[in-house]
Amino acid sequence: MTVWENVDGVLSNRVDYATSKRPAALALGDIDGDGDLDIGIGSADMYLETTSLLYNDGAGRFAEAISFRMGFSNVLFADLDEDGREELIAGTNGNGSAVVVTDDLVQYLQNR
Image (cartoon, rainbow, N blue to C red; front, side, top):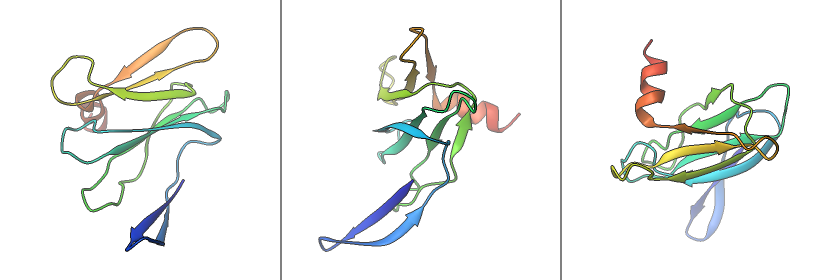
């Protein structure tokens, strides 16, 4: 995924981020409640089956993608539990299943 910085109306400072293969959907939301938009990416690759999350560092840059082996091609953010932090919801086109990813779950998995 490529992000361009808007500097006085001119796109510059290209930054490339590694994400899941064959990205199919992108959503913006604030999963960690810090006021900055994070990025969720769904993959159309049925063999790699990954959904990616990139945290915004607050300065317009993003941390290295965290990828989950979930295999969902649709993503969106919503505050399902009304705690002020959005959750990443990933779903499929085919079998009607979905997964909800919270910031707490991401932190737990990274610190195991």
